[in-house]
Image (cartoon, rainbow, N blue to C red; front, side):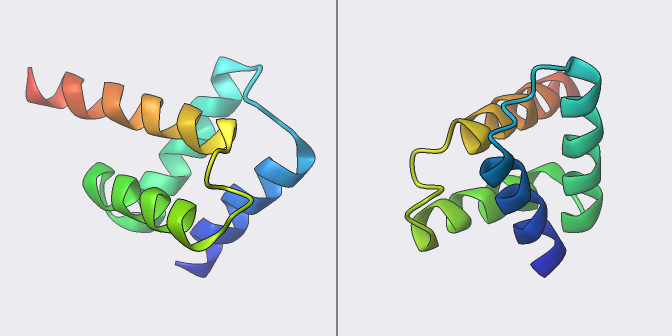
Length: 77
């Protein structure tokens, strides 16, 4: 999961808040792939937010969680 963490931290440190929908989709797809599923990705992001004070209120994490929720909701329909 170290790659997962480094992707999130890199995006956060660059201040990149996903202005491009294509970029956001690529990042989320890669995070889901690294984690092996949407549910695990959500758990990992929440865990990162608890462990890292920089990420606790990060808009990057919030944006990723929103996209993951949308993906999860679409699958459940």
